[in-house]
Length: 475
Image (cartoon, rainbow, N blue to C red; front, side):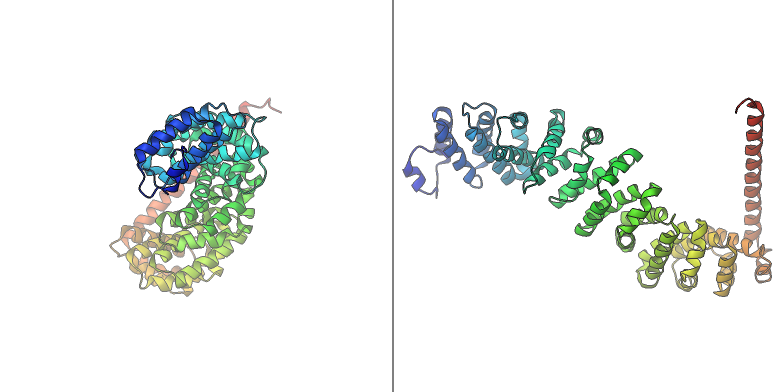
């Protein structure tokens, strides 16, 4: 590792005496000129993959000292040391702990100090400092808190504001995404105007870094102010692209973050126009239960817009026709959710979902029948949907369910049959069910619920009138 003579170099290090080589390295660093130090450090850098871990560990404090204090005015020794430390961190990976050792030796503070010396660092050197810092943050996740406490995020944001748009910018973006795993750093991003860089970090770099950025977007985007800033920074197409580029984890994170953005009604349209509905269809049809839950929640948000409800219903019908059992169950859950939307009632009917659901019910599992029965009970409140169910032969099935062992199935069937019985067009068809104990029990329960609701409405009206009477002086 030393640079003392040509003979040792000509051996090619086929079978080096590492103890001797390390001693030469120490001597070269302690007493050699700047040029000798640079050669020795670069030699160690080239041999990083071969040097035993013991000597690598012994070299780290020496290299950290070179970065911290240097009598070399042109920074060549510090640059060589930073490059070597980066090589060691990358070759060692997370498991060897070399990056953590560097952090304990003060390398992070030294690198931040060098980055702050704006007038004495050229762009070439600044890239070297940033790459070294990137390696520490990437392969020493436990030292990110220390970097944040030293003001690392603020310095990274400053560098991004001034950095040329070249091939090394992604190093800074990956450092930024790593720091967003810390709650306080996410706060700093919001208040320092750094959210645009978080969105940029979700677009470029390795997939793990983009996933970190996406996760942070989901956490930050829960507030209206931050959501607006993220949308203005172009977060919607960035998340859609990440979903398309990524694998399972990235798809879940991007889908969840997009759902959080769409929770604000003014962003439903741009989220839809970015092509998000097919992405959630994929999640709903997939094998991951979390993906299904995310898709169901987001579909309920997007379906607030009637045009979206039409598109979603069409996709749900396709899943009911072509999907596997799990996908069909998930689609039926979404239909149940959409049944509570006034405009979605007609959408579901016109999509052709009703006869398809009834066809699937005949051979479906108990779980499937329970879920579908909930959607049917909700849809039966609409006159046109009652007509569609009746024409498709649903009433005899509902009457049969009154005697089923499943309480949920019995209750949902009874609720639907009560709605049919209150419709003169269908009363005769459900007459035989009226005397059934389950039907009568549900009828009494619904009557109590309706009476309680009417009492609450009257109470609210009385409170409002009394409030206005006592505040007659108000303009």
